[in-house]
Length: 98
Image (cartoon, rainbow, N blue to C red; front, top):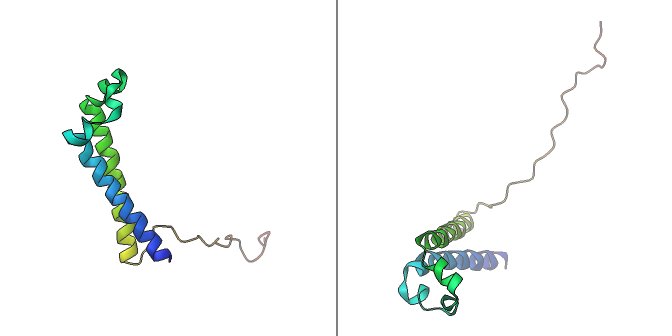
């Protein structure tokens, strides 16, 4: 069950990342939306900087999905293993003998 859940999350992240990478540069998705009618938002959406920022978020999202997918395929967990506390380094006798 956990395998299927992780696989679906990785697929979702990759799909959302690809959509965020491509949508700002596609006239069908970017220019034809309901938010473009507002003057403030229309001015922001016309900026190439905003398009680049949205594409950058898409790259990060797709990379996170690919990382999770590779971790799932190759059997490595994306989580760090718990650290075991190390015993303190103390001499055998305290205080030291004169």
